[in-house]
Length: 517
Image 1 (cartoon, rainbow, N blue to C red):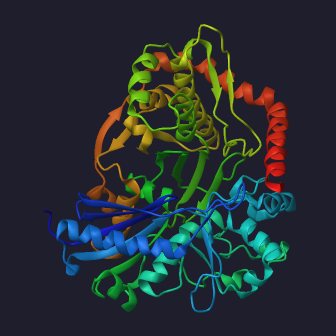
Image 2 (image 1 turned 180 degrees about the vertical axis):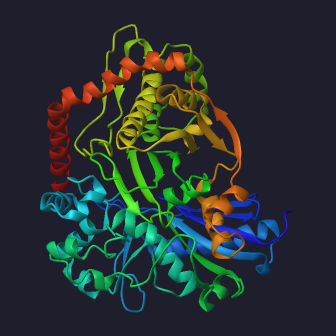
Image 3 (image 1 turned 90 degrees about the horizontal axis):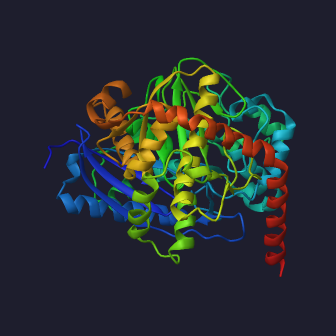
């Protein structure tokens, strides 16, 4: 086994919490996942019990330590990455007043539309004309209107990662990352978005947010006494600020300087890059000052249904059961098809579009079908559509002046050579895969190593702990072949937008009617 010191990275996801323990060279020693439940209270609502997050932390760390026979003195730091914006209302004693409203909860859609219509200068961080039901102001406004007694009693409206950081350290602080990307915190313009909050009638919201906001990789303090007892770890363990899981994964991919783009794949796709200049543009989110590295700016975009769309198609054909046969049987057949899937085109907006259209009412399309097409045509067209969607955001990045010379990817798509090669071919850009697939837990370990003073900064830490495994080069001939299909992909949305919005409104009416019965 590698020699200490070790860093623990926590990755609090939608379905469970993952613990990874790494040495100072970035070598993984063990991974442990502990599941927990999500309560889908109503259509569009999603809640979790914060105590489940803490229990998963305790169980996961204890189990991981036992698996490798590590001693408490071996652990230098613990860092939390978690879903964002997943919010919990805490009273003065730190007791949750209600279940946490997690990131995917969109009950605050009306509030988001109201915020967008207000035209606050802060909205430049969310693409100028847009606001999200997922972000903190929308959820806080919903709480103040629909559960005012809970909102008034809330002493601290905490993010998932910040809640666990408090349970570990006893310190009520906020991650500068979470604050910047989901709460309009602007390091260069006074911090918390007081003007925006006050315009919504949330004059007291800043009082419910921590005064202390720390950059990722900053040491918060030592392990608090209650956490020492729960985890059987010593006070010498440093608790270090993390942030949103995807941005911690960005660190775990080594994307901490301009020039590269992190592509985090899974049920959804997230594209993130660093910039040396502050640029705001329609159809992308950011630039967030200091969200990952102080002195730099972070820009993001993404897709809401990528792997989840493939999962939907699999369930249709596979009777709802997961089966490796689905991928094993369709992939070789799909690989034999030409770019463009013999004239089948898919629009991947099955759950709306995050960027560049920021259109929650868009819907998926399967176009060009004939009686000669088979399931492998649709399968390949779905993969191509996800790659077109990524390229659509990537081109918006480049139009805004961001140079992207390589893409570093992690997540489910890296397990599919077809998917990876299609991403490279559509974008015309090389895709790099790192040695450790668990980028979010590794990113936490990297941040922990900085906070524990094992490395001086993120540059030094990522060079020491993040290692390339392989690179997928684009086929430039296929890149040219894909161009007309990419143009058809964008034209499909433009031509069908009114139809898609009408169909989405009908679906919503059916859901509402069934809920009322």
